[in-house]
Amino acid sequence: MLFLGIDLGTQGARGIVCDERGKVFAQGTCNFGSLNTSCKEGQYEQAPIMWWNAVKQVITECMDSLLQTGRKPSQIRAITVDGTSGTIVLLDKEKRPLRDALLYNDMRAAAQAEKIHRYAGELEKKMGYLFNASFALPKVLWIKEEEPYVYEKARHMVHQSDYIVGMLTGEYGVTDYSNALKSGFDLKEEEWPKLLDVLGLDRTIFPSVIPPGQGIGTITKRAAVEFGLSTDTVVAAGATDGYVSAISTGAVRRGDWASVIGTTMVLKGVTEKLLCDAGGSSYSHKLPSGDWMFGGASNIGGRCLNDSFDKEQFEMWNRGVMDVIPTKVISYPLHGRGERFPFLDPEAKAFVLGDISDPQIHYAALMEGVAYAERFALEHMQHCGAAVGNEIYTTGGACSSSEWLQIRASVLDRVLKVPEHTGAAIGCAILAASASCYGSLTEAAGHMVSYRKIIEPVHRLIAAYDQLYQRAFQAYKERYRVTVR
Image 1 (cartoon, rainbow, N blue to C red):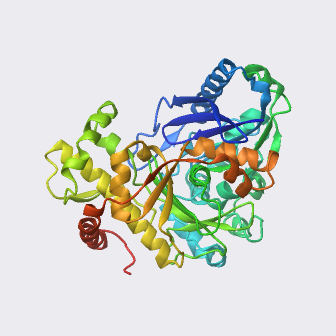
Image 2 (tube, one colour):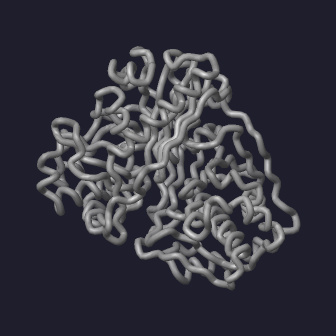
Image 3 (cartoon, rainbow, N blue to C red):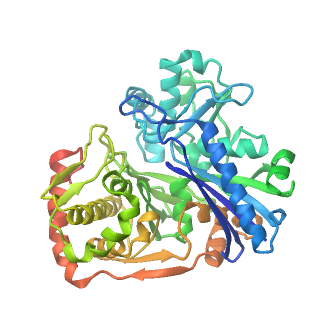
C-alpha cells in the first residue's frame, strides 16, 4: 500500500509517497510564485489558485518518480493535505475564491480579535487559549466588517488544506480538528459555538469537522485521469502543518515533544489533559485518540537565515559555525513585526545585542537566536504545567544543518532525535495511513518513523550557553510582553 502526503507551507508545496513501513518512493516540490500578494505593511496574502497549481506540479512530479520505481500511481490508497494554521479564504457559491487568502501571520484583525475576546470568555477558558489576530475567526470577522461586499457573497469558509481537498474531491464543506481550532470550534463539545451567532457570523459557511485521518471522500474522475490515480483513492482529513510535522517526528505518545523549525518554529507535546496558558500564546490541538497536543507556533524560525544570507551559500557558512560559537551575540531574529508564541506581542520587532559585522558571526548568531527562543518556548511549556523530558524529537529545514543541531542541543541541554524523513509531508502520509491501514496514529507512527541522527549536547558549550540564555531572557522581558516567571 502507498500513501501520499501533501504539505502546503509558507513558501511552497511538497509531496511524498511512502509505503506502510515509511519507505519513501517518490517526492516532489514546487515553490510559490509569490510569497505575499499584499502591498500593505503587516498584511500577508496569497492567491489560492497558486496553491493548487503548485500542488498539481508536486503530484505530477511524485507520480513521475513513482513510475520510475516500477510502482503505479493507482496503488496510492489515501492522500492527506496539510496547510498553515489560521490561513483562510472565503468561496462563493461556485466554490471560487472571493479574494486572496489571509495568511496565518497576517495580524490586521487585532481589533476583531479583541472584540471576540470580550464575548468568548467561556470558550477561551474551556479550550485554554486566547483569541488573537493570528487566529482564523478574527480574520473572518475582519472581512465581514471591512469588506462586507465580499462577505455577503461567501458560501464557504475554508482553510488552506480544505481548499486543496475541495479541488481534489469536490467537497469543500469539511475540515479537521486542528484547522478548526483557530476558527473557534469547540473541541471539547465538538460543535461550533454560539459565539458565531453573537458575532453575527453565518454559521452555514463554516465546515463540518472530523478527526484528522478520517476519510472525506474519493478523488474526482477528473483528478484521477490527470494524475493517474485510482478513483478509489481516498482523501482523508489533514491537519495544520505544525500538527503533522509533530507527527512526522514520532512524537505521538503522552510525554513526547516535537520541535519543528522550518520557516517558523512550532513546538508540540502530547498531554493527557488539556493545559491552559494564561498568556494566551499556547493552545491544545486534539488528537484522534482523545489526547491533546499542547504548544504553539512562533513567527521566528529558519527564515531569518534567508532574510540575511544567500541560500546557496548556507553550506559554506555552516562549515565555519563551530569556530565562532558561542558568539556572545543576543538576538531575537523575527521576520516582520509581531510575535504569537511563546508570548503575544503584535508590536514585537527583531533586536540584536552585539557586533555582527563579521558575516560568519552574524550567521551563527542567528542560529543561536532561534535556539534561545526554542529554549524559552520549552520553559514556557513547563511553566504551563507540562513535563519536558531529556529527548526532543525535531524536524524541519533547520535539521539540514548538523552545526545548528549541535547549537540547539547545547542551548537546550537535551538530546535531539531527527527522523529519517523529516517534514510535514511525511507526517501527512503517516496520518493518511493511520486510519486506512493501521488502527491508530500511534501504531502508524511506530511502524513508519525511524531516526537518522541522535544529537548530544556539546559539553564545552552547555554552561556558556546557559549564561547567554539568561541574558537573552532578560532582554526578552525588557522588550516584549513576556510573562515574568
